[in-house]
Image (cartoon, rainbow, N blue to C red; front, side, top):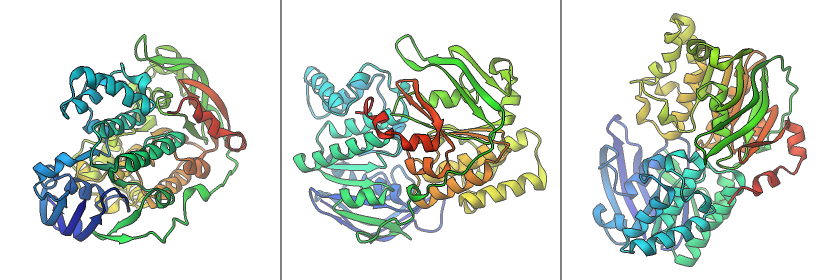
Length: 478
């Protein structure tokens, strides 16, 4: 179904090829998984299979690509439905149901039939309750669910999925992976999926390849022996006074969309607080309130013992750090170095001290070689780590991280976990949102679990893992 022969691709910003004589054969009706370190070229390969490189991803390409017997991208794209790494790049409609309807109408289905089928597909993917929602009000995970539903709805011959599960909670990941497998079996769809969880892919895929030095190698017999989830270090932490305090703080985006019910939460210096919950539970809303990027519509949030509404914006920016789930929303400088030092320079932190701190951070996160690159030319995983470096470069006291390891390969994820454990000492308060239970085990000292915007658990990390924590996800998951 897919044949790639001697494929080379060199990005416009580089003089070295990312793909180096790559060869790939994918049998019709099979499931092929691709893995590899961030920036190794997985997304570049997926874009080439879509015929979007060098048309969209600028650069020089040589070699042969055949999809369903077609060599012309304009023709072979008709056989494919993709899910991109960033769902924001493929969702265009105002409402959720309209997004699916537009996918069905392009197959020739009438508006009436498409609307009926779209409702069925949304129910099938467990997001029927979101049908009337505006797409820009969805959480990252909900957007990923919608993107996958849109790709499956037209019943394509080929599904190209670039990390389609990275933003999903653990229960949803299992459910959606099962749904992809069902579509593969029942419809005979050929699936190519990029995913970092090697253990999961060994059970799921017919073929598993790692992209290494521009070429594919079969890793069917290998396993990921150093998974973060095997690290269980519940070290005692000396937590001091609260630097962030929610007092009956809640937030509604509209009369119909209540993201966070009124709750009381404290974040203390020295704590590493993991915020968990199903997709759309209100986690990102909570994180934004922590750094005053969003003001609660009811109740109060106190920062540094002062009402956040009365703390000057400059003081908040100087003493806090934040990373978005989607790093594209915060990267804007012309080089990685300028990006990372922007906040420091903004607050008058110049010279050797700032450069020395950045050097230590970039080395710990594995981005030293990227300092002169333009941030928006990086892979999604590299962007994540650059955003993380920029959040810590000015030595903030409070840091909120929204999915800091989502979409990272396991080596990069372990780098991030080690960096956060070493950097966030007694004087730093860290709140991080994650669906990666391994990261919680490796890093967290405390857990808050949200469901439908409500706090259902707040306690020590050991207490959390002693409970039946998986059941907390089930009620609201698809």
